[in-house]
Length: 310
Image 1 (cartoon, rainbow, N blue to C red):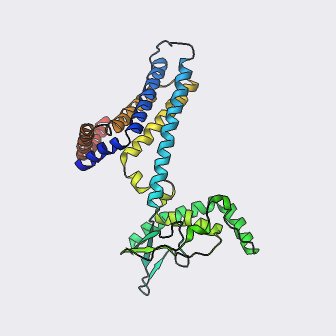
Image 2: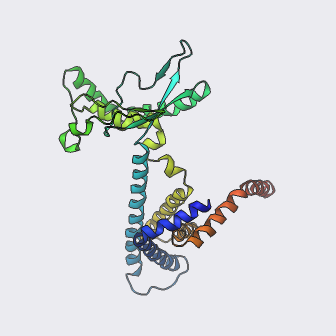
Image 3: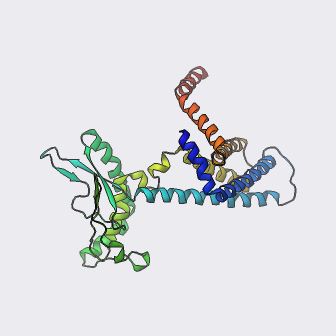
């Protein structure tokens, strides 16, 4: 944990301009929220006639920047994870042979030396807990895309082959043979897929393979992103800020929403401050560890409060 705190502080020195720029935008957002809340909740007078309109517009621009940044971060984490997706295999109980959900398919990839991690240890209950959510997501996606799939199937039965359009940027150069080396425990994708690249191949690369790897990753929530609780605080901060300023733009901001937004603004401030200095990073990390160690006591304390509340 201490090493992570040091890394957080050292990372800030490499992107110090972006960090300070985001802190400046956050200060502007806090100022706009403070003024809007003081006008709607506390009943303060305006500095000029169009003050609230200007503050709401500026706040929307700042929140849009943080929202786009969060979406790009999610996309980058997903792309990094899908560079080496897990292709799980299972052992047949009848003849003790290994088979995979992708048997009969050629695993394709845009990278010529794309790696796939193979796991042969899923048996019994682990098999069903692994397959059920993936099959459910596959069914849901197939149901949503059923009109398109029906048209593609009908055209395929009629003898028409639908290829990926050239404007998608996928060319035969993307499938050149890669190195022959294969690290231990990893399996490489076939290096000579058939050309042209069809829509079925596109669906396998962008839908089937990501869902079999991890349904949440397919939906955009990469494992590294969703396991960092600071990202969930960022989502809560963005949701509360969007809601607060959207309501303030059309009517009066409520006291409850103002309190919730203030809390998440404070959490976001702690998230930004921990990158500015090593001392701040160590202090916030200490608070994180204390809260984590008190989790059992907090749950038990909440149970007691709920019991005596009735």
